[in-house]
Image (cartoon, rainbow, N blue to C red):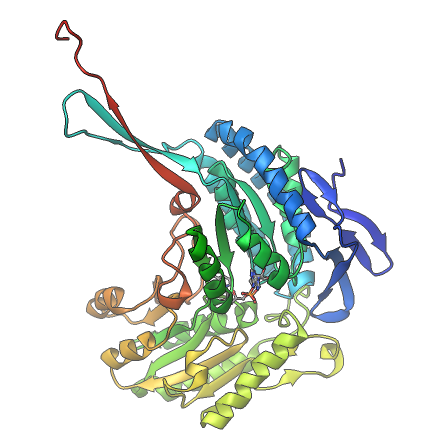
Length: 501
Ligand code: NAD
């Protein structure tokens, strides 16, 4: 059995295989696709299997064969494998972070954080293996005992995006495994490498073959086939709202559970009494961290007119101070976008903003010269004078791009914040306790921060959005294991014996 995801090395990067039934296997297609470094697209990070439906069938068969035995392993023992995985991830943290920076561009500080999230989830989920999995509930009858137990879903298909190449595969896959499921993981084609590395470490930690299978390939063909496969009992997608809607339709037809974590158009509200330096620092990090490619990225700033100019001047100065470049350089604040196609997509929004009459204050252009010439770089971009009906105030841009919307009161700020189809994360800068508690109720989003950026989930709290940001499920924390399992209610009667005992 091959113990490394890399099959061969060519002059231009390694060839990586699928992980099926505990083995590294080439695709039946005999074809590969390549992933390149977005800081220098001439550098190939690796070649990955262009998987076909035949490979998917192999993965489903392997998962189906392995799942019953895995479900029979005591949950604490399943947890022990996750704990060993956490230790292995820790040992390899620097190497994985550097690979991730090469694969998708974000700076080392952030890719270290991405791997750390996987470590934290593995530790947390290891502990969940020892927690009670059901409840005992008093019966309304005499001589009767009621309880619930949790059971795995069976085979879970997990489809992940490219912006958190290890954290997101980990935060879906690990609770699914802990709950006793077998998993077929399909990572995004821009970042397949880290998902394969995670599978390798889980295998090294003792995960039996077939319990986790990773297949790489295009979402439209392979992802669609995974979602439609009758042998797959549940789908977990993290991705765009458009793909989420499509998947929900397919799963809906079969009444199959699907958990969707989708896009966002996250707002920071800066009120009159805000600490402006803190607000500027938080917006800069929220909007330009991960080059704006986070589902929780700050995309709108709703600012009180009384402080609008002071805030805007400072934000523009902060954006212009950011050092942009290859994320492997520790001095760099912001890396490239994930690929050149994304540069075009973000630039189109700059053109839309200008056509709509918003005011471009800084950025608004790709970086093409010198060290930037081979990469997918875009300048941090700030628009002011944005109104809620403009497209740049409503649509997810997914780049280093922020729109400033002035308002005259707290009430108007909440109305504008809620005037979007999304509802993932919102942040409010205020020191007023009354406003703080009102906002907790009045803001329509799954996550709400006070005096902090819109980003920064903690792995032991539930994570997810409302409205078009999801379909009501919550992942991370103790909720995650529930998402990947079914509750069964059990009623035990013990009628008294004929002796009246
Ligand atoms: P995407 O929707 O294009 O792709 C996500 C995954 O779905 C990829 O693996 C892709 O190959 C697959 N896919 C594409 N078409 C498919 C289809 N027809 N059937 C099945 N699978 C298919 O998203 P992306 O560009 O990779 O990621 C960015 C998006 O993800 C943004 O909208 C972002 O907000 C969102 N996101 C959400 C969260 C969250 O937790 N809410 C976290 C990260 C990213």
